[in-house]
Image 1: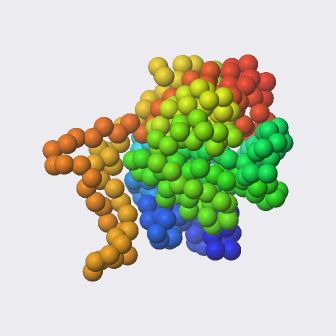
Image 2 (image 1 turned 180 degrees about the vertical axis):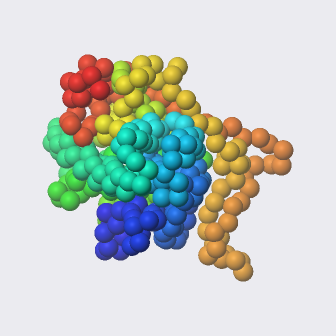
Image 3 (image 1 turned 120 degrees about the vertical axis):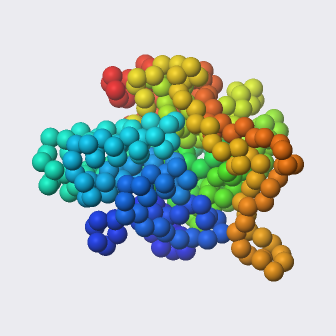
Length: 370
């Protein structure tokens, strides 16, 4: 995607071919910069501290993390240790384990001297496939947006098509294009008049900081709203569709996404607003059935709730990034990072292979038995 007219991906190999660069998302939207990763430990830290985030991008970063580990020590023991270290960084998104297993399976049968090169090749394939899958999601989602826009009442057809999204499921969460935002980018480039309601997405504010950042760089009209405003907008006819991403989808169509998604799905259901979930094949966990009972929910630091990061507006330190405490001393915080939206609340799943009902039958119609 574009930043100030220049095409970017979120991750890539450095010129030496032995280290990896990533966009440092902890500095956005106020500063744009990249960070170089030269070891498995640095890749693991980048994932756990959310320098990189978003299920697909986490998976690709993990794949390159194994490459970095194997360049240092290509033994079976080192491979297993690196796999475990990277896999433990973010427990909810299934893409991470999927990508790690794919690289591990590619290199295990090879002699140690050939493993690092093979891991580099496999990680590159995973990255390129992610771009292709997200682009395909965009194409399928564009068809939905066009159909919904055409079916609106006459009084609304001359108004922008209104999409609400939660968290960041754009190109910053993937390698390029994104999942939930890919249909929006395709629609914008197709000339459709649309506007995006961007949930701030507390506590880390990925919507306010990341989604708003990339929509702005692409010239997509948008407005940042507090998380609790979505239901109000739906009640008053200001939302034509909700599109979100997912970090893990069970075989029956339950979706696990950033905390607060479930509440948006309930509001959409109550107001007859279509609620779509966009996902690549790598996000489907065929081993799980009941998302509420079976998906592990990551609990992050309470400090993400009790403090907030931003750019200081005035004073001698104006313009610098700082963390500010929000709560009284002694108040604790509880910070589940995700929640699960049951399949019954999902209008349809927008995948790289097409649009499916949120059900085991719907997913199998596109992917077979997984």
